Every structure is written in C-alpha cells, then in structure tokens.
Image (cartoon, rainbow, N blue to C red; front, side):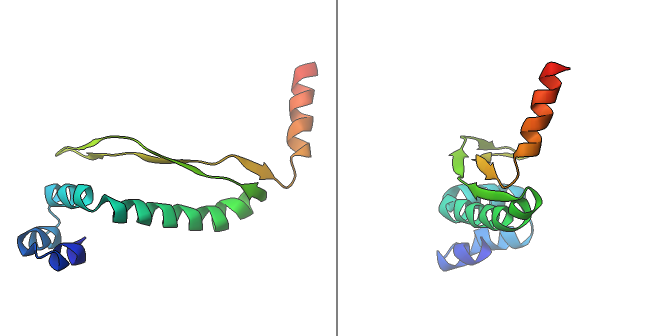
Length: 105
C-alpha cells in the first residue's frame, strides 16, 4: 500500500502507513481494493493448491469468492472476503461407509 500511495503522489498517506496508522490502512485498502482482492485470491489459490489439496487428497475443486460489504472502524476492519470450495476427494468411499454405518446403528 505504501508504494501505491507514493506512486499516486499521496506522500502524507504513505507516511501514515509507514507509521502503522490503522485508519490510514483502512483508507488505502478501500481506495486500492483491487490490489487487496488480488492478493487474497492469489494467496488462497496457493493455499488450496498446496496445503488443502494434499491434506484432504482433493482430486478436483472449484472455488467461488464472496465479497461482503463492510466498513473500517477504529476497533477492527470488517470487510470479509470468503472463498467457498466444493471439492471431489480422491478417497470418499471411507466417508460414505461411516455415514451408512451411523444410519443403521
């Protein structure tokens, strides 16, 4: 954000960001929300492609992103971004067996 503000010629805002000013961060994240969203999408894709895919043995997945409206307050930033992931697991048979057993017991 600091670099974006400096490129835009907003040196005072960049200075506030360097000082870890929360309100300045909220203002910049609203102004440059495309970069914030892009960062989230790239980071979550890497996480899904490595950690989650290997841990859950996912064969295929599809991800949908939901951007909820929110606000920046002095206490915390309330702008949730969610990623929903329906997936096809490599070995689902054992899950189905457990479910069937629980129905009949």
